[in-house]
Image 1 (cartoon, rainbow, N blue to C red):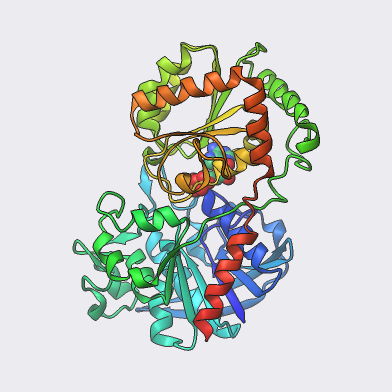
Image 2 (cartoon, rainbow, N blue to C red):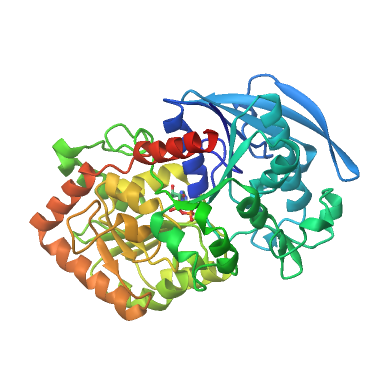
Length: 466
Ligand code: ADP
């Protein structure tokens, strides 16, 4: 069985969020038992020193245009990745857009990426193509048209991002008008890439069992709940995991003091160094952190609304966020000026994120919705207690009333009262050193690695080939 795993971002080459982590960790786990290679775009910002020489070249005729494609390869932890080099990917600074919105060339850019995935799958004699999110979704349609011997799995990492374009792109991509229907790609008179992935793949998965149920409802279905209900027989939720070698406090080169279950006390050194680095002071106060994209999904409306009340408590708060939303950025900055127990860092910083996971006491995740969430799993691996809004994958991974993997603080309503109440429970827990220590130990023994979930994907692939 030969698998091609396609994603728009793969760590360590490119990562803007959890998709990048998963697109590394899942193939890595699968590669222990299966023949698997990956494919992703060669963005302008990717460090070219990763590459061996050009592997493959071909021209792709898409609609009325011809695109010259070069493919490079690189290997990381034993998994080979193909990089799609086209002048289109060289045009932009970032992945999908900037804080003024999505890039205007996302189509044809990701359309070309999808066509390349199909061509590569044919050239490599692939049995199963595993597609991820809208950037890869059109490949499912083209495989159904041109390479029917190949099976496809499509994973929805976040239904809120769908790849919606004007209907004129159909001609540009050489896609027949017959697909412009409610059962096909049409979405409110526009073209939806993600619908192609859902309609034409042999199987659709999403990244937690709870989210698989939620997206069938109007509240979380992002306008696609009826469509997903229609396809629900081929929909399955498989919980994400993390790479336990990359996120390991025992060996992590990014953290000042390595620790494990035998010497958890050394975690305190990480807290001390972090508080010094961020100039927060060294009082014995609980340290709350958030590491996130700066988007509504992650609960920034609620957080900003509750922030001053949070900061009036005896605690430290650290937020590391990218700069996706300039309004949230300004609001957070104006509050940060008033409180010296609040440190705000903008940008994407992998090493700092590890130091924060290792040095924190509590991780805040007040998400409005959360397909799976990796932050809480990483936090628990580093002995940091998650405080989460009970939604999506957070409900599959964090429990307050049961002794199950993992343990944390869960608030039911995404409201200020519930959040502040959860904060109070965290402050009380911090004072009960024994209870907190036991919880940290319990979580550090949990297994959130990808290996368990990889087995489920393997079973699914086998089923498709029988
Ligand atoms: P999402 O994919 O919705 O952004 P996840 O919880 O699935 O959220 O994954 C987020 C991943 O991105 C985690 O590895 C987290 O540590 C990382 N991350 C998020 N924001 C930042 C940031 N500003 N700097 C560094 N890492 C970040």
